[in-house]
Structure formats: C-alpha cells, structure tokens
Length: 111
Image 1 (cartoon, helix red, strand yellow):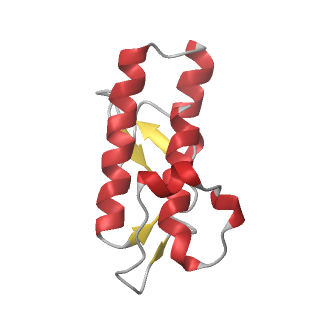
Image 2 (image 1 turned 90 degrees about the vertical axis):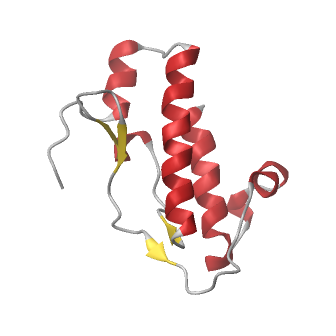
Image 3 (image 1 turned 120 degrees about the vertical axis):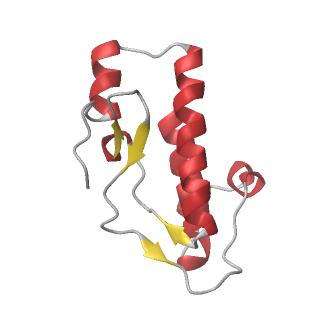
C-alpha cells in the first residue's frame, strides 16, 4: 500500500467539526462507488468506518483495512438500498447479508 498523505477521514472531520454539503456529497459518491466495485467483485468489507477511510493529497478517498473482509462464495448474495431502508441489519445473521451490512455502514459514515 502506498503512503496516503491526508490521513484518516475521522481526523479530518474532527479537525473541521463538520463538512459542508458539497464535501459530504463528494466523499459519499466516492465511498458508494468503492463499495459498489467491491460488491461487484463479490467482496464485502465488513468494517467500513471513518478510521478505515484515508484521504490522499488530492482529497480523494481510499478504503483500507480489509482484515475482516471476505469474498462471498455465491453470486446470489445481493442487497440493495431498499433492503437496508426497510430492515435493521443487526437483526440478520449469516453471510447472506454481508453486502447489506456494508450498505448500512455507508449510511452511518455519511451521517
């Protein structure tokens, strides 16, 4: 992994206090695109949080810490935004909802 100049998104948020709406949109799109890419490769991160998102010197994000990430065996392991908005992922068990958990984590990070 290359050195990422900007540090953790958590530290930047702590130093800034809040982000304006345009900055939140800029970061949210990057996070969603990165997780979408992982899910298309049938990989789930399972630990998405501000501490696991770094900012490079140009202001772009990189997701790190794939220590508990895993590759799903079955291609039918799909979740979408509608699933997340109608259910609490903490109620689910097993691998079939790992993608949904990533989507839930995205919501928490963006919030």
